[in-house]
Every structure is written in structure tokens, then in C-alpha cells.
Length: 613
Image (cartoon, rainbow, N blue to C red; front, side):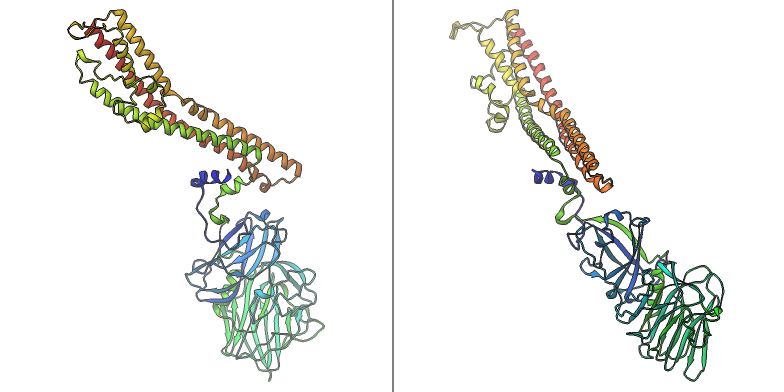
């Protein structure tokens, strides 16, 4: 029965969605990477880059559909087949926010747009995030400061964890950040992957926020056998300094100071062509010095234990320690392109236009519609009401189709009979009568007569049957003589009235047959909506009773039951509305036939009264 109802409601179903990555996930969200100048503004292609997906109430309203720690989150490429590696930096369903890093194999850049899908809604899913796999091989270090118990934990697979001095956790542009007070910093020991050469180059990057101007404050320092490279802040201007093994110093300052009390993306890229400083994804200064081989420890924000760093004084003098905040500090053993740096800066900023969050969709696999989901939640009492309504609908449709065919046949035969009758003279009004039409014809089914009769003698015409009854009554008053002795038929007024009464009786019986079963349409029209309402009320009562018993009050617990309960009302209206249209149409045709019959009786009686009185 459920399959029959699904077919019945198929015309109301929305179209089948695009391909669905996996049937176990109920929902997905479309996310578009827009690198056009008016959006992300990344001109060239970028490979193996991460993009930060920020979920909040402004772009995602279904945190209640996610598992407690986001275990059911999955990201799939635009082909809806290729899973993307990702990891969650922060997931807070109570405050409805999440920060998720997603690795994109290739971003075309320019005006090209590409889509990725975020799937969710699988209560049986296990966590699939892969922090180490979310970075490409050259990315040797990422400190996102997201773990309060391990502030210096490296998120990459290399595990180059930092030694933390006086840094404490704070709030940053991407979740947590490290807050430095100028008396100490962090040290990353020399480790796997932390190697820069002139051939491979390197990329250092971080988010920086300073609330006041600095006095020769160290941002980071990286040493090697061929020299030392550091970035420090003078006032509010970042400055790059390279000191070679002979003590020769080369410096370049950013083209403009950074705004205080605001977060800025700072990156330094080196290769055999020189060093380039980037501020917020844009080039801000360059040194022609060839990148030295760097393989020593990296100092961030100051020194620990009084060790010197390059040409910067020890942090025993607090004026040389950075007072500010850092977030998402990273080191890559390759020289990233200018587009790569810009993509990272634009994609990580809080108000990024790089990502466009689209609508959320629900799985409709196999052509299923929302109705199939609703019908699966209909309770037993609802099905009882729906089955009754389906039976009523079937009966009403049978009545409408049979009445429609019968009335069409009656109108056709009535027209043929009246055309022949109009040609008769006054003295021969009984000439169209045939004894072949008897009581059996009057009592047979009008539908069977309309379908199987040969209609050679107006077999379906109810006007003819009334005419036949009147002619037979006339013949009962004809004298039993033949030949030359045949007498002319003379009718008294009483005889004319008797003939009219006979014809009126035949007319009434014809009208009874014509209106037969129309009451079934009336029952469907008046009873269908009320039966549907009964099913809805009972379904709503059961839904609220179940919620009260479980104590779980949320839209996911209420919506399926309420929607399923409303199916009964929809079914009731689906029964009543076609029956209403059919009843009005058939009723108007029956009225026309009734009027023709009354007119014919009056005309026939008037003719015989005039001729035979």
C-alpha cells in the first residue's frame, strides 16, 4: 500500500538531486571557492593548499544534526566522488561554531570557481579527520595553538613540537592563539623537514597582532651554518634581516607599518632569487640575497634561557621580546608562489570572501522524495485513515468515470432520437416506438448499455424510454379492430392525464438511475477532509506523547511526527478535491438531461392531446 501511495504522490515530489557521494550521509552543504578579483582575488593556480571552512549561525544552522565532536563531517571534491583530507581545529556545537581545515588538490585561480561538498548527518560515522595528511610534504611545521594542554604541538606529520616559554593561550583569528608578554618565546628544535636550501627555498608564515609599537622585537629567527635570518618589528613595521657567516648584514623593511590592534598575515619566502616579505598576501619588501642553507633551531618571539638569536639581544632585556599575539605559525621547506601566499592569507582571514557558503541539501537517493521520508514516519493509526481514504478515492474515481461515459452516451442517443422525433407528423408520433425495448432494457446497467449496446434504436436514450412508456400507454387505449374497421384513437382528458402520469413515472425512474451513485461523490467531498483531519489530530497527539515520554524536545524529534501526521490531511484533501470537481461537472450535465426530458414530456403530451382529443 505504501508503494501505491508513493506513486500517487510522485507528481508532487521534488526533482532528484545531483549525484550523492554516500547514501549513509543524509545532508550536504555546497561550498564554492571563488578566486575572482571581486572575491578571493587569487590570479594564478594553487596546488596542495588548505582552505579554512568557518561554520557559524550565519552560514550553517544545523549543528544539532552533527555528531557531538563532528565525527560525521566529510568533505568531497566537486566531482562528488573524491574525498578531501581535513582536520578540525575547533568544534563547538553549543556556541554553534566550527573551524575546519580542508586540503584542496588544485585551485585554478582567476575567474574560475570550483565547488566542494560538506557531508554530514550520519549517526554511525566514525571520525575521519587527518591532520598530518592535510598538509603537503614540504610543510614541516604548523603551530595552531589549539591544544591548551600542548600549546606547542605541531599539527603536521613531522611532529616538530615547540618548547614553550612564557607564552599563554589566547583568542586568535583562527581559534586559539599564543600570547607573548615580551619576557620569553618559543623554540622549535632542529628536526625533520626543517631545512632550507637555495634550490628548494623556504616559506615562513604567521598571523601577527601587536597592540603597541615594538622596540626591535623579534618575530622569528632561523639560523644555519651559512648565516642567520630573522624578522623583527621596529615600531609597527616588520623588517627582514639576513646576516651571513662573515657578519655582513642586509636588511629590508616593509613598505608600510601594520595597523595596531589588528591581525595581519606575515610571510617570508626565500629561494635562489632572493627573499620576499608579504603582508596580508601582498609583497611588501624584497632582498636580493640568495637563501642560505638553514637547518638550525627556530626562535619565535624571543629567546629562552638567555640564548642569543642572530643579531638580537637576549630577552634579559624585555624590550627585545615581542609583546603581542601569534597564530598559525608555519614553516615549509619550499618557496611558495605569490598566489599560494595570497590564497592562504585571503582564505584564513575572518571576513574572507574566498569561500561562498551555499544551501544545505538532503539526500533523495534512488529518486525518493521528501514524501518517502514522511511516509516512513506515519503511525499505524495514520495508515488506517489513509487506507480508508484511498478506498474512498478509488470508489469516487470509478463513479466519476462510469458516470462520465454513461452521460456522454445518453446525450448522444438523446440527440439522435430527438432529431428523428422532430421529423414525425402529428398523426404518427408513435412511429419511432419499438417493442424491442422492454423492462429488461430499462432495468439493465446504464454503464453496460453504454459500453456494449449496439444503439441501433436509441438504446441508451432515457428520453426514448420515457417516450416508449407513453406510446405503450396510448396503445392500451387503441380499439382492438383492424383493416377497414380500424377506429381512430380518441383520447379523453383523463386518458391524456393518465399517459402523462405514466411518462412522469418513467421520467422519475430514469432520473433515479441517472443520479445513482452520485451520493458516493458527496461522501468523498464532505467526509474525506474530516477523516484526514482525524488522522492528523491523532498523529499529533501521539507525537507529543512520545516527546513527553522521552524528554527530548528539539525540532528533529517533533518535525517528522508532525509532518507524517499532516499526510492524513493531505490525503483527505486529495480525495475531496477531484470528487468536488467531478460532482459539479457531472451535476451540470445531469441537469441538462433532466431539462430535456421534462421538455420532451410536455411536448409529447401536448401533441397527442391536440391530435387525439
